[in-house]
Length: 115
Length: 112
Image (tube, rainbow over all chains, first blue to last red):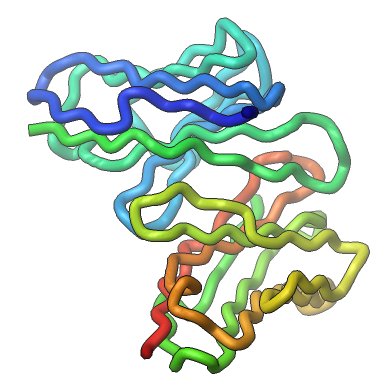
């Protein structure tokens, strides 16, 4: 079934550790996104990509980095985690092209706790 | 760039009554307006969307209206049920930039 898969779903790590959140989609979409969201709160776009080798920073400043080497894969990396990074991270994707907007589909999210 | 304002931030309605959530947008080039529902602990999911060539769209108990002149759009839920309790996000997508801009969300409580 076409979907967006995120791993790990839940993670507790210590301050200063490096962590990579994985995201893969089988939707066949060119565009991919990372959002940061505290429970039930505003969705903050932190990174997006319109295709392979394309990455852009979003509206919310983030100390994370992303890469897009393969169309279906869009991992997010925190080089040195801090308690302020504790949040839910949602990966998403959408089709490219068209002139009337694109529907975004979300993964189930990765809940990160930094202690 | 586009800016989307969403009101109210919290809404409580009696089960069986109607709920209305309103959004305004700033970029007249926006022509795609989706609504997402996020249940507790779940991912946001698309429930209905509208494109600027129509003024209203219905899907069972859910409807969305769009007023392009005033640059606002609304979500209407009739005969509310407990499972409608969730956070709802509106969004707008400008043609010139495919990035979708989300509102800040409305927490809807259905009271028994």
